[in-house]
Image (cartoon, rainbow, N blue to C red; front, top):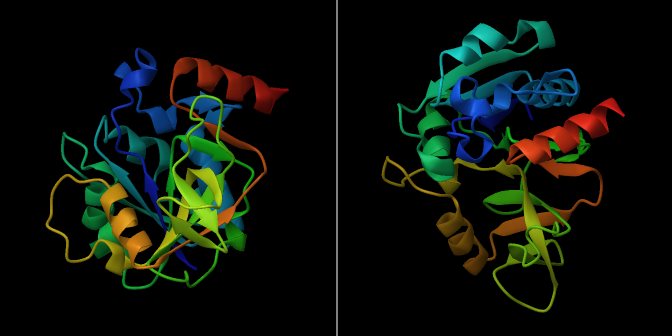
Length: 222
């Protein structure tokens, strides 16, 4: 798999005041911008081409990351305008830059030790999502994982979406342009038995507020 999308367009409202002048993916953690950890891991996994969707303080991304050559990558930027398009709208907006093959998509505001090279090249359905054990701040989880398929409800284990996945463009292609979330498309794919998943039990961090950023920074430096 050669292409990837990084969601980096959010306003980072819960991270204020840190994000008043710096977009959340460019905040430093462990000695480098949060998004740089993803770029290094994608390059190590054999990805050569990365699309980064941007909105809030978008002009800072090219200045900080350039064309990606320092990581052996080619980076393109998909600007969403001053108002972020949410996950679904952002993915649809980036499709012209991503091509017709399945691609990796990750949120910039997580950190994990997950090896992107282990993701399936061809998802068994419209998408393949990496699920993690429910964190203390989100005990109800998102979806039920049963025999490598995801369901809205059921007898299997309920887990939290880790914001790492592989997608076929067909998941969002055909949807009207504009601002929309991926969740309704996940729900439709689950009804059609077209949403695959796996459980990951390794190191995974959500970076949603200054405290979580500080905790991750201490973990990486320690």
